[in-house]
Amino acid sequence: FRGEEAGEELHGMYIKDADARIISHLKSRGALLLRESIRHKYPMCPRSDTPLIYKQIPALFISMEGLKHKLVRANNESVTWIPSHFKRGRFGNWLENARDWAISRNRVWGTPIPLWEYRPGDGGEAAETGAAPPKYVCVGSVKELERLTGTKVEDLHRDAIDGLTFRLPGMRSGRYERVPEVLDCWFESGCMPFAQFPADETGAGAERPPALFPADFIAEGADQTRGWFYTLMVISLALYGKAPYKNVIASGIVLASDGRKMSKRLKNYTPPDELLSRFGADSLRMCLISSNLVKGEDSAFKDADCGSVSRRLLVPWMNALRFLKTHARLTGWSPGTGTGTGGRSNGRTGDGGDGGDGDGEEGNGDGELLDRWILSRANTLVKRLRGHMDAYQLTQVSPCLFEFIEHLTNVYIRLSRPRFQPQHRAGQ
Image (cartoon, rainbow, N blue to C red):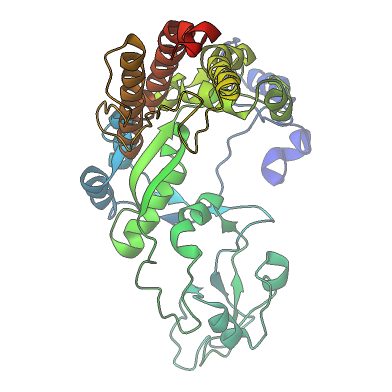
Protein backbone atom coordinates (compact mmCIF):
# COMPACT_ATOMS: atom_id res chain seq x y z
CA PHE A 1 0.00 0.00 0.00
CA ARG A 2 1.20 3.48 -0.86
CA GLY A 3 -0.18 6.99 -0.73
CA GLU A 4 -2.43 8.92 1.59
CA GLU A 5 -5.40 6.70 0.79
CA ALA A 6 -3.71 3.77 2.55
CA GLY A 7 -3.35 5.63 5.83
CA GLU A 8 -0.47 5.37 8.24
CA GLU A 9 -1.55 1.93 9.46
CA LEU A 10 -1.28 0.26 6.05
CA HIS A 11 1.29 2.43 4.25
CA GLY A 12 4.24 0.37 2.99
CA MET A 13 2.61 -2.96 3.91
CA TYR A 14 2.45 -5.81 1.34
CA ILE A 15 -1.15 -6.03 0.24
CA LYS A 16 -1.62 -9.70 1.16
CA ASP A 17 -0.09 -9.21 4.59
CA ALA A 18 -2.68 -6.52 5.25
CA ASP A 19 -5.69 -8.87 4.98
CA ALA A 20 -5.87 -9.63 8.71
CA ARG A 21 -5.45 -5.98 9.68
CA ILE A 22 -8.18 -4.84 7.28
CA ILE A 23 -10.58 -7.53 8.60
CA SER A 24 -9.85 -6.48 12.17
CA HIS A 25 -10.47 -2.84 11.29
CA LEU A 26 -13.82 -3.64 9.65
CA LYS A 27 -14.85 -5.75 12.61
CA SER A 28 -14.03 -2.96 15.10
CA ARG A 29 -16.29 -0.60 13.16
CA GLY A 30 -19.12 -3.13 12.96
CA ALA A 31 -18.79 -3.23 9.18
CA LEU A 32 -17.74 -6.88 8.82
CA LEU A 33 -20.58 -8.91 7.32
CA LEU A 34 -18.84 -12.28 6.92
CA ARG A 35 -15.42 -13.81 7.28
CA GLU A 36 -14.65 -17.15 5.62
CA SER A 37 -11.97 -18.87 3.51
CA ILE A 38 -12.74 -19.94 -0.06
CA ARG A 39 -10.32 -22.16 -1.98
CA HIS A 40 -10.08 -21.00 -5.60
CA LYS A 41 -7.67 -20.48 -8.46
CA TYR A 42 -5.67 -17.26 -8.31
CA PRO A 43 -3.32 -15.60 -10.85
CA MET A 44 0.33 -15.91 -9.87
CA CYS A 45 3.47 -14.34 -11.29
CA PRO A 46 5.14 -17.06 -13.41
CA ARG A 47 8.61 -15.89 -12.35
CA SER A 48 8.35 -15.03 -8.65
CA ASP A 49 5.35 -17.24 -7.84
CA THR A 50 3.76 -14.38 -5.89
CA PRO A 51 0.08 -13.32 -6.14
CA LEU A 52 -0.80 -10.81 -8.81
CA ILE A 53 -2.89 -7.80 -7.89
CA TYR A 54 -5.49 -6.28 -10.19
CA LYS A 55 -5.44 -2.51 -9.93
CA GLN A 56 -7.18 0.20 -11.92
CA ILE A 57 -4.85 2.74 -13.49
CA PRO A 58 -5.35 5.41 -16.18
CA ALA A 59 -4.68 4.09 -19.69
CA LEU A 60 -4.94 5.04 -23.36
CA PHE A 61 -7.44 3.08 -25.46
CA ILE A 62 -8.27 2.53 -29.13
CA SER A 63 -12.04 2.49 -29.65
CA MET A 64 -13.11 -0.73 -31.38
CA GLU A 65 -16.77 0.13 -31.93
CA GLY A 66 -16.25 1.45 -35.45
CA LEU A 67 -14.03 -1.50 -36.45
CA LYS A 68 -16.05 -4.45 -35.14
CA HIS A 69 -18.16 -5.09 -38.24
CA LYS A 70 -15.14 -4.68 -40.53
CA LEU A 71 -13.16 -7.21 -38.48
CA VAL A 72 -15.93 -9.81 -38.60
CA ARG A 73 -16.51 -9.33 -42.34
CA ALA A 74 -12.81 -9.55 -43.24
CA ASN A 75 -12.38 -12.72 -41.15
CA ASN A 76 -15.45 -14.41 -42.64
CA GLU A 77 -14.80 -13.48 -46.26
CA SER A 78 -11.05 -13.69 -46.79
CA VAL A 79 -9.36 -15.89 -44.15
CA THR A 80 -9.13 -19.69 -44.02
CA TRP A 81 -8.60 -21.06 -40.52
CA ILE A 82 -6.97 -24.34 -39.58
CA PRO A 83 -8.71 -25.79 -37.59
CA SER A 84 -11.80 -24.44 -39.35
CA HIS A 85 -13.91 -24.06 -36.19
CA PHE A 86 -11.69 -21.15 -35.04
CA LYS A 87 -13.10 -18.97 -37.82
CA ARG A 88 -16.58 -18.48 -36.36
CA GLY A 89 -15.80 -19.97 -32.98
CA ARG A 90 -12.90 -18.90 -30.83
CA PHE A 91 -11.65 -16.08 -33.07
CA GLY A 92 -15.00 -15.09 -34.56
CA ASN A 93 -16.59 -14.75 -31.12
CA TRP A 94 -13.66 -12.66 -29.93
CA LEU A 95 -14.08 -10.25 -32.87
CA GLU A 96 -17.82 -9.93 -32.39
CA ASN A 97 -17.30 -8.97 -28.76
CA ALA A 98 -14.15 -6.90 -29.27
CA ARG A 99 -13.57 -4.46 -26.45
CA ASP A 100 -11.69 -1.18 -26.58
CA TRP A 101 -7.97 -1.92 -26.77
CA ALA A 102 -5.77 -0.60 -23.97
CA ILE A 103 -2.58 0.19 -25.87
CA SER A 104 -0.54 1.87 -23.11
CA ARG A 105 1.80 0.19 -20.63
CA ASN A 106 3.57 1.69 -17.60
CA ARG A 107 7.06 0.37 -18.23
CA VAL A 108 10.53 1.70 -18.91
CA TRP A 109 11.45 -0.43 -21.92
CA GLY A 110 9.18 -0.32 -24.94
CA THR A 111 8.23 1.91 -27.83
CA PRO A 112 7.33 5.35 -26.43
CA ILE A 113 3.81 6.39 -27.39
CA PRO A 114 4.30 9.41 -29.70
CA LEU A 115 1.76 11.59 -27.89
CA TRP A 116 2.76 14.92 -26.39
CA GLU A 117 0.34 16.36 -23.82
CA TYR A 118 -0.19 20.04 -23.18
CA ARG A 119 1.02 21.24 -19.76
CA PRO A 120 -0.16 24.77 -18.78
CA GLY A 121 2.41 27.34 -17.76
CA ASP A 122 2.53 29.51 -14.64
CA GLY A 123 0.40 32.24 -16.17
CA GLY A 124 -0.36 34.27 -19.24
CA GLU A 125 -2.26 33.39 -22.37
CA ALA A 126 -1.66 29.98 -23.88
CA ALA A 127 -1.83 31.44 -27.35
CA GLU A 128 -2.04 34.84 -28.95
CA THR A 129 -5.64 34.18 -29.99
CA GLY A 130 -6.61 33.14 -26.47
CA ALA A 131 -7.87 29.79 -27.78
CA ALA A 132 -6.96 26.71 -25.78
CA PRO A 133 -4.31 24.59 -27.52
CA PRO A 134 -5.13 20.96 -28.35
CA LYS A 135 -4.70 18.63 -25.38
CA TYR A 136 -2.56 16.16 -27.36
CA VAL A 137 -0.25 16.30 -30.36
CA CYS A 138 0.53 13.01 -32.10
CA VAL A 139 3.99 13.21 -33.69
CA GLY A 140 4.06 11.23 -36.92
CA SER A 141 7.77 10.91 -37.71
CA VAL A 142 11.30 11.60 -36.50
CA LYS A 143 11.48 14.53 -38.90
CA GLU A 144 8.37 16.08 -37.39
CA LEU A 145 9.73 15.63 -33.87
CA GLU A 146 13.00 17.28 -34.88
CA ARG A 147 11.11 20.18 -36.43
CA LEU A 148 8.90 20.71 -33.37
CA THR A 149 11.71 20.44 -30.79
CA GLY A 150 14.60 21.83 -32.79
CA THR A 151 16.68 18.83 -31.67
CA LYS A 152 18.42 16.14 -33.72
CA VAL A 153 16.81 12.80 -32.80
CA GLU A 154 18.90 9.64 -33.24
CA ASP A 155 17.47 7.43 -30.47
CA LEU A 156 13.77 6.77 -29.85
CA HIS A 157 14.08 5.18 -26.40
CA ARG A 158 12.44 6.90 -23.45
CA ASP A 159 15.64 8.21 -21.93
CA ALA A 160 16.43 10.00 -25.20
CA ILE A 161 13.08 11.63 -26.02
CA ASP A 162 11.16 12.03 -22.74
CA GLY A 163 12.96 15.31 -22.09
CA LEU A 164 12.04 16.80 -25.48
CA THR A 165 9.34 19.45 -25.18
CA PHE A 166 7.93 22.03 -27.57
CA ARG A 167 5.40 24.78 -28.15
CA LEU A 168 3.13 25.13 -31.12
CA PRO A 169 3.31 28.33 -33.18
CA GLY A 170 1.52 31.18 -31.40
CA MET A 171 1.82 29.68 -27.91
CA ARG A 172 3.19 32.06 -25.25
CA SER A 173 3.01 29.79 -22.21
CA GLY A 174 2.85 26.12 -21.39
CA ARG A 175 4.61 23.34 -23.21
CA TYR A 176 3.96 19.91 -24.67
CA GLU A 177 5.54 16.97 -22.82
CA ARG A 178 5.47 13.33 -23.86
CA VAL A 179 3.03 11.08 -21.99
CA PRO A 180 5.01 8.62 -19.81
CA GLU A 181 3.51 5.38 -21.19
CA VAL A 182 4.95 3.02 -23.80
CA LEU A 183 3.04 0.98 -26.38
CA ASP A 184 1.60 -2.45 -25.68
CA CYS A 185 4.15 -4.83 -27.25
CA TRP A 186 1.27 -6.53 -29.13
CA PHE A 187 0.72 -3.26 -30.97
CA GLU A 188 4.25 -3.55 -32.31
CA SER A 189 3.72 -7.22 -33.21
CA GLY A 190 0.54 -6.27 -35.05
CA CYS A 191 2.54 -3.81 -37.17
CA MET A 192 4.93 -6.51 -38.34
CA PRO A 193 3.77 -6.78 -42.01
CA PHE A 194 4.27 -3.09 -42.72
CA ALA A 195 6.70 -1.88 -40.05
CA GLN A 196 9.52 -3.58 -41.97
CA PHE A 197 8.63 -1.44 -45.03
CA PRO A 198 8.39 2.04 -43.49
CA ALA A 199 7.32 5.16 -45.34
CA ASP A 200 10.06 7.52 -46.45
CA GLU A 201 10.90 10.77 -44.68
CA THR A 202 8.13 12.64 -46.51
CA GLY A 203 5.52 10.08 -45.46
CA ALA A 204 5.13 8.69 -48.97
CA GLY A 205 4.22 5.01 -49.00
CA ALA A 206 2.36 5.01 -45.71
CA GLU A 207 -1.02 4.99 -47.46
CA ARG A 208 -0.46 1.73 -49.38
CA PRO A 209 0.36 -1.77 -48.11
CA PRO A 210 3.74 -3.35 -48.92
CA ALA A 211 4.13 -5.78 -51.81
CA LEU A 212 4.35 -8.85 -49.55
CA PHE A 213 0.86 -8.31 -48.19
CA PRO A 214 -1.31 -10.06 -47.25
CA ALA A 215 0.69 -13.07 -46.07
CA ASP A 216 -0.10 -16.47 -47.61
CA PHE A 217 -0.17 -18.00 -44.15
CA ILE A 218 0.88 -17.44 -40.56
CA ALA A 219 1.11 -19.93 -37.70
CA GLU A 220 1.06 -19.52 -33.93
CA GLY A 221 -0.46 -20.95 -30.78
CA ALA A 222 -4.22 -20.93 -30.30
CA ASP A 223 -3.86 -18.42 -27.47
CA GLN A 224 -2.96 -15.78 -30.06
CA THR A 225 -6.63 -15.36 -30.96
CA ARG A 226 -6.43 -12.63 -28.33
CA GLY A 227 -2.86 -11.66 -29.21
CA TRP A 228 -1.00 -11.63 -32.49
CA PHE A 229 -3.81 -12.91 -34.74
CA TYR A 230 -6.07 -10.20 -33.34
CA THR A 231 -3.69 -7.23 -33.35
CA LEU A 232 -2.54 -8.01 -36.89
CA MET A 233 -6.17 -7.94 -38.02
CA VAL A 234 -7.05 -4.75 -36.14
CA ILE A 235 -4.12 -2.65 -37.35
CA SER A 236 -4.33 -3.95 -40.92
CA LEU A 237 -8.06 -3.18 -41.12
CA ALA A 238 -7.54 0.27 -39.63
CA LEU A 239 -4.74 1.16 -42.06
CA TYR A 240 -5.62 -0.64 -45.29
CA GLY A 241 -9.13 -2.04 -44.91
CA LYS A 242 -8.17 -5.67 -45.53
CA ALA A 243 -7.05 -8.78 -43.65
CA PRO A 244 -3.27 -9.17 -43.28
CA TYR A 245 -3.25 -12.94 -43.93
CA LYS A 246 -5.02 -15.51 -46.13
CA ASN A 247 -4.52 -18.67 -44.07
CA VAL A 248 -3.98 -19.14 -40.33
CA ILE A 249 -2.71 -22.28 -38.61
CA ALA A 250 -3.57 -22.22 -34.92
CA SER A 251 -1.79 -24.95 -32.99
CA GLY A 252 -2.45 -26.10 -29.45
CA ILE A 253 -0.11 -25.29 -26.59
CA VAL A 254 2.63 -27.78 -25.67
CA LEU A 255 2.24 -28.56 -21.98
CA ALA A 256 4.54 -30.37 -19.58
CA SER A 257 3.99 -34.08 -19.00
CA ASP A 258 1.94 -33.29 -15.88
CA GLY A 259 -0.45 -31.11 -17.89
CA ARG A 260 0.85 -27.83 -16.47
CA LYS A 261 2.43 -24.99 -18.41
CA MET A 262 6.12 -25.53 -19.19
CA SER A 263 8.13 -23.33 -16.86
CA LYS A 264 11.80 -22.49 -16.56
CA ARG A 265 11.28 -21.90 -12.88
CA LEU A 266 9.65 -25.29 -12.28
CA LYS A 267 12.01 -27.06 -14.71
CA ASN A 268 9.18 -29.44 -15.60
CA TYR A 269 10.49 -30.28 -19.06
CA THR A 270 13.56 -31.81 -20.65
CA PRO A 271 15.93 -29.18 -22.10
CA PRO A 272 15.51 -29.08 -25.91
CA ASP A 273 19.20 -29.72 -26.63
CA GLU A 274 19.08 -32.87 -24.50
CA LEU A 275 15.88 -34.00 -26.21
CA LEU A 276 17.38 -33.48 -29.67
CA SER A 277 20.56 -35.29 -28.67
CA ARG A 278 18.60 -38.34 -27.49
CA PHE A 279 15.98 -38.62 -30.23
CA GLY A 280 16.98 -36.29 -33.07
CA ALA A 281 15.13 -33.37 -34.64
CA ASP A 282 13.07 -35.51 -37.02
CA SER A 283 11.62 -37.54 -34.14
CA LEU A 284 10.57 -34.35 -32.37
CA ARG A 285 9.05 -32.88 -35.53
CA MET A 286 7.05 -36.04 -36.27
CA CYS A 287 5.99 -36.33 -32.64
CA LEU A 288 4.54 -32.80 -32.68
CA ILE A 289 2.87 -33.03 -36.07
CA SER A 290 1.32 -36.38 -35.11
CA SER A 291 -0.23 -34.99 -31.92
CA ASN A 292 -3.46 -33.13 -31.21
CA LEU A 293 -1.51 -29.87 -31.40
CA VAL A 294 -2.26 -29.65 -35.12
CA LYS A 295 -5.96 -29.85 -34.26
CA GLY A 296 -5.65 -26.71 -32.16
CA GLU A 297 -5.82 -28.69 -28.91
CA ASP A 298 -3.37 -28.42 -26.02
CA SER A 299 -1.23 -31.52 -25.53
CA ALA A 300 0.91 -32.79 -22.65
CA PHE A 301 4.34 -33.63 -24.05
CA LYS A 302 6.17 -36.75 -22.87
CA ASP A 303 9.72 -37.60 -23.89
CA ALA A 304 8.63 -41.19 -24.48
CA ASP A 305 6.37 -39.98 -27.30
CA CYS A 306 9.46 -39.09 -29.33
CA GLY A 307 10.81 -42.58 -28.81
CA SER A 308 7.50 -44.11 -29.89
CA VAL A 309 7.40 -42.09 -33.12
CA SER A 310 11.02 -42.96 -33.79
CA ARG A 311 10.32 -46.70 -33.45
CA ARG A 312 7.23 -46.54 -35.65
CA LEU A 313 8.60 -44.35 -38.44
CA LEU A 314 12.25 -43.39 -38.41
CA VAL A 315 13.83 -46.67 -37.30
CA PRO A 316 11.95 -48.70 -39.98
CA TRP A 317 12.83 -46.03 -42.53
CA MET A 318 16.54 -46.19 -41.65
CA ASN A 319 16.45 -50.00 -41.68
CA ALA A 320 14.93 -49.88 -45.16
CA LEU A 321 17.73 -47.56 -46.25
CA ARG A 322 20.38 -49.89 -44.81
CA PHE A 323 18.74 -52.82 -46.60
CA LEU A 324 18.92 -50.90 -49.88
CA LYS A 325 22.55 -49.88 -49.37
CA THR A 326 23.62 -53.42 -48.49
CA HIS A 327 22.08 -55.04 -51.57
CA ALA A 328 23.01 -52.15 -53.85
CA ARG A 329 26.63 -52.72 -52.87
CA LEU A 330 26.37 -56.47 -53.50
CA THR A 331 24.74 -56.08 -56.91
CA GLY A 332 26.46 -52.92 -58.08
CA TRP A 333 23.14 -51.13 -58.35
CA SER A 334 23.35 -47.34 -58.72
CA PRO A 335 20.54 -44.80 -58.32
CA GLY A 336 22.22 -42.68 -60.97
CA THR A 337 22.02 -45.27 -63.73
CA GLY A 338 19.19 -47.37 -62.34
CA THR A 339 21.04 -50.56 -63.31
CA GLY A 340 22.93 -53.26 -61.48
CA THR A 341 24.77 -56.46 -62.33
CA GLY A 342 21.57 -57.92 -63.71
CA GLY A 343 21.37 -55.12 -66.27
CA ARG A 344 17.68 -54.42 -65.70
CA SER A 345 16.38 -50.90 -65.36
CA ASN A 346 14.57 -49.90 -62.22
CA GLY A 347 11.37 -47.86 -61.94
CA ARG A 348 11.38 -44.45 -60.31
CA THR A 349 8.76 -42.33 -58.68
CA GLY A 350 7.29 -39.54 -60.72
CA ASP A 351 5.74 -36.23 -59.71
CA GLY A 352 2.50 -37.53 -58.45
CA GLY A 353 0.35 -39.57 -60.75
CA ASP A 354 -2.23 -41.48 -58.75
CA GLY A 355 -0.42 -44.77 -58.62
CA GLY A 356 1.92 -44.59 -61.61
CA ASP A 357 3.87 -47.74 -62.39
CA GLY A 358 7.22 -46.10 -63.03
CA ASP A 359 9.23 -46.94 -66.15
CA GLY A 360 10.33 -50.50 -65.38
CA GLU A 361 10.16 -53.26 -67.96
CA GLU A 362 6.88 -55.11 -68.35
CA GLY A 363 6.84 -58.50 -66.72
CA ASN A 364 4.52 -60.98 -65.14
CA GLY A 365 6.66 -62.17 -62.21
CA ASP A 366 5.69 -61.60 -58.61
CA GLY A 367 8.77 -59.43 -58.12
CA GLU A 368 7.83 -57.21 -61.02
CA LEU A 369 4.33 -56.77 -59.60
CA LEU A 370 5.74 -55.88 -56.20
CA ASP A 371 8.02 -53.27 -57.77
CA ARG A 372 5.16 -51.69 -59.66
CA TRP A 373 2.98 -51.72 -56.54
CA ILE A 374 5.53 -49.94 -54.30
CA LEU A 375 6.17 -47.37 -57.02
CA SER A 376 2.43 -46.79 -57.16
CA ARG A 377 2.37 -46.35 -53.36
CA ALA A 378 5.29 -43.89 -53.53
CA ASN A 379 3.65 -41.80 -56.24
CA THR A 380 0.38 -41.81 -54.32
CA LEU A 381 2.26 -40.65 -51.21
CA VAL A 382 3.79 -37.72 -53.11
CA LYS A 383 0.41 -36.70 -54.51
CA ARG A 384 -1.38 -36.91 -51.17
CA LEU A 385 1.30 -35.07 -49.22
CA ARG A 386 1.41 -32.23 -51.73
CA GLY A 387 -2.36 -31.97 -51.65
CA HIS A 388 -2.54 -31.94 -47.86
CA MET A 389 0.32 -29.47 -47.45
CA ASP A 390 -1.05 -27.12 -50.12
CA ALA A 391 -4.37 -27.12 -48.23
CA TYR A 392 -2.62 -26.76 -44.82
CA GLN A 393 -4.20 -30.07 -43.71
CA LEU A 394 -1.42 -30.97 -41.30
CA THR A 395 -3.51 -33.59 -39.51
CA GLN A 396 -3.35 -35.77 -42.64
CA VAL A 397 0.42 -35.68 -43.11
CA SER A 398 1.66 -38.19 -40.54
CA PRO A 399 -0.98 -40.88 -41.30
CA CYS A 400 0.19 -40.90 -44.94
CA LEU A 401 3.82 -41.32 -43.88
CA PHE A 402 3.08 -44.07 -41.36
CA GLU A 403 1.00 -45.95 -43.93
CA PHE A 404 3.74 -45.78 -46.56
CA ILE A 405 6.45 -46.94 -44.15
CA GLU A 406 4.22 -49.88 -43.21
CA HIS A 407 3.77 -50.79 -46.88
CA LEU A 408 7.48 -50.37 -47.63
CA THR A 409 8.93 -52.31 -44.71
CA ASN A 410 6.35 -54.89 -43.68
CA VAL A 411 4.97 -55.68 -47.13
CA TYR A 412 7.37 -54.81 -49.96
CA ILE A 413 10.73 -55.57 -48.31
CA ARG A 414 9.45 -58.59 -46.41
CA LEU A 415 7.96 -60.18 -49.55
CA SER A 416 10.98 -59.19 -51.64
CA ARG A 417 13.67 -60.66 -49.38
CA PRO A 418 13.87 -63.99 -51.27
CA ARG A 419 14.62 -62.09 -54.48
CA PHE A 420 17.80 -60.72 -52.97
CA GLN A 421 19.27 -64.04 -51.86
CA PRO A 422 22.48 -65.01 -53.73
CA GLN A 423 20.96 -68.08 -55.36
CA HIS A 424 18.00 -66.04 -56.59
CA ARG A 425 20.18 -63.25 -58.00
CA ALA A 426 22.36 -65.82 -59.79
CA GLY A 427 19.35 -67.16 -61.63
CA GLN A 428 18.27 -63.77 -62.95
